[in-house]
Length: 262
Image (tube, rainbow, N blue to C red; front, top):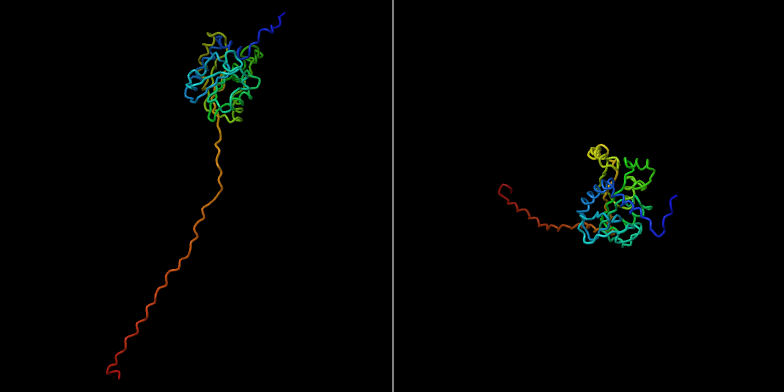
């Protein structure tokens, strides 16, 4: 019989368990590719405040140059210990949010996205990563009956994530799918399927294990509606031409009577 868990020992949060799994050979294979995506995307995002939600043991904002970079979540080591669905931050206060796999392991992923939209400034960016159910990894999750990490997570399809973003006014601007090889625990077995990494983007673009997505918060500009006043057109006024002075007719010259007329 299994002994009941000791109540004095707090249970690991899902993200802490996921962070432990990322230390495995298969986890390192995954996280290296995601880290490369974050490094490339966040390097050219400017502002003042950047926030990483969960997984503080991996610095996904390391290539960003903002003056303040913090972390928030329930994972051990977060600078702000809070539920990602209820961020203790002001509205429109963050320029960049990194969201690595939070939607996979949170019970209210749409509420997490709502909070991200709330704290982002206009034209702020969010970078999201998550597991793709339409992949070999998604098939393995079904075979394992969602037991263990990372298979117990809720894999959301990329189309569903984009629908959620569209409802919140977050527009995808860049994306990439990684990890096309089968989820073999052995590195030697995975190396035999390296050809799938190079051919996946071309022949099976939606079949990678993880999606990486960047989105921007669009805010419609407010346009001031003014009354439709029009400058009246000038009314043409008929101007009478000056009257011409008629000169008196010159009387005809008197006819001279000659001898022949008499």
